[in-house]
Structure formats: C-alpha cells, structure tokens
Image (cartoon, rainbow, N blue to C red; front, side, top):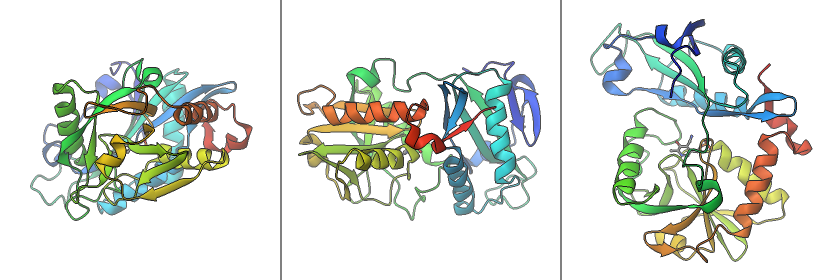
Length: 305
Ligand code: PMP
C-alpha cells in the first residue's frame, strides 16, 4: 500500500517512506497509546482538496487531550503538513493519515519521559469496503464484541488502542462471510461499525444511535447537515438491533467508507435488499460536496496547494 518512495512528514521533516523509521522499542508499538486521523482529499475542478480538514485536526487535538498527550505541533503546522503531503506526492485524491505516537525514550506502561512524535502520510485509497460496496451495498453482522464502555476506553478519542476492538469485530464478520460488523455498546444498544457510524431510515426519518460508545464522526455530522438541508428529519435515539433489522434503509458513514449502503444484517434483508432512495440521495449530496460541486459547502474544502 505505502509506496516506499512516497514522502512522509515526520516531526517537521520530509523523508522518503523508506527512511521515516522508528525504533522497535517505540512505546506506542508496545502498548498502543496514541491517536490518529483519517482525512480524504478529493479531486475537484480546482485541484485536490482536503475535506473538512479543520474538523479532523480539531478531533486529533481532542483525542490527544483525552489521552493526556501534549501535542508538539500546532494547528497551523499540521494543516500545512496535511496539505503538502498531498501536493508533494503528486496525488489527485488521497487518504491522509496524521498519527501521534510516543517514542522509545521510555518503556513501561507509564509513558512519562517518552517523547511525542507526529507523522503525516498519504496514499491513494479507493472505496474502503471494495469497489461494489458504494453501489450494491454490503452485508453486516452484529458483532459478538461490544464497543468500549466510556470508562474502559473513551470512544470520543480516535485512539489507536480502540482499533484492536474494531479489528476483532471485522475479522469475526469476515470469517463468517460478512463484509463489516455493527458493534453494540455494553448496554446492548447500537453503537457504530468497526470504523463507521451508522444511520437507519424508517418511515422517511433518519435515526442515529444516541450513545457514548461511538466516535463523533465527521462524515456523520456532514450527513446530518445535508439531510436537514434536504428537508429530512434527523433524530438521535437509543437504537436496538431489532430496530436495525426492521429499518427501511441502513447505511454506514465514514471518511474511508464514505456513505456505504447496508443491505443485509444478520441474514435479514434490509428493505427490499437494495440501497434505498434516501441513501442514494445522501450519497449524491455527499459526493457533490466532497468534489466541490456544492457551492453552499465550499468552505468544507481546503485546497492542497
Ligand atoms: N467510528 C469509528 C470507530 C471510526 O474509526 C470512524 C472512522 N474515522 C468513524 C466512526 C467515522 O468517522 P469519520 O466520519 O470522522 O471518518
């Protein structure tokens, strides 16, 4: 996936990927303590542009704050690095990955004394759940793993360690022939996908889980705005898995997954088993916004150059 010659920003320096290296005694490699972001840059008529970059960098700062990691670089520096990583690598569209991790100055669970490092990398990335997923929709299962209780791991941080739970759930789903997982919270209410937020549509209304066990997705927020602008009612409520089974439409949202229709959950067909009209309408509005074709939301885009 990563081109060894691509340029990576590491603590303020541009290095070829083959030289952007860390020690095997890096604290984060041992204990998974750190945080990251995933941002997409899309091709627009005026060149590549990053979608909702300030919101992603704000969430990175929030994640670091939640983990009590002092960010060594300010917003302006990281904004420049995210823009430049697309431009310097000559990418028309890209997935941009800032990652904050702790170094090898100290091992042992308490990271006091380990230095904080930041990388920003970028690579081309097509449809996250496969080429057909956006058109045809995907099949998902409710995971046997619960999403973290906020007193186990705070889900508002995009923490590296939260993804062991995501990986367990997605591997379990794929082992069983599904494409993705839906995770419930520890009380049994729907939380989110392994790396997506979830919406259902029932009788023309858009419903999302009211939960403290999900990431506050930026695509989710975008969809809420676009749906309200389209005159749809949007409401957050505690959702149970049977409400998902009986929805007219279900879809996932995420930077990588974009808006992916879900057409089957736990061997139950959703609606007529095809992506529904509300999902399609929101996909169209979303892709218009990310590609700079929605004049109302030009401020969601930051040009790479
Ligand atoms: N939940 C989880 C666990 C995720 O990893 C992601 C992807 N960042 C999302 C939700 C969706 O968030 P966003 O729309 O900001 O990418």
